[in-house]
Amino acid sequence: MKNFYTALMTKFNATVAGSHNAFWTAIGGRLFQGEAPEGTVYPYGVFFHINNNQIDNFKTKMDDIILQLSIFSEKSSPVEVHDAMTEARSFLDDCSLTISGGILVSFYRISDGLQKDEVTTASGIQSIWHFHVDYRAIFERN
Image (cartoon, rainbow, N blue to C red; front, side, top):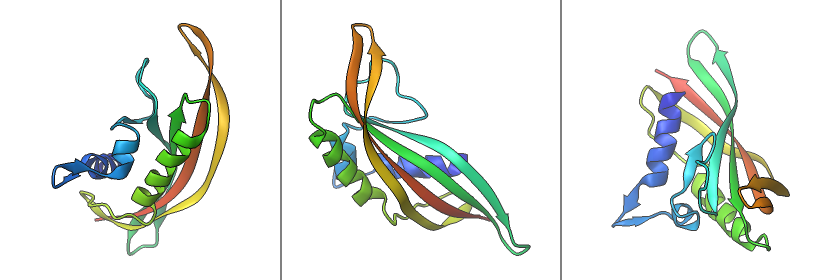
């Protein structure tokens, strides 16, 4: 599992000709596993490990991973979060990853949604936009 998430972050942080991918740019390079640090500037992304089922068919051992990516924005309109999620989908849909200790067999989007959340800050309650998308990854272990 650790190798899978390391590969995901390596892909996210990679540069081509000195430039980051459009998803990285849309969220200012702020992508965190599990939880963003307190006071993180919007917009930002967080990915969560939802589920992992092991598949063992006596020939190969695989992990069937469900992860959720969430993008958060404090803008009054959902445009910023929509734009960031469009870039996230372009970056992640059917992506390939180089994973130490195995091979990524498939990676695809399951579902997504947009909602308005309320968060408590030092200055009170604030409304934010929250766009979330779930992905399924099948990882064959060596």
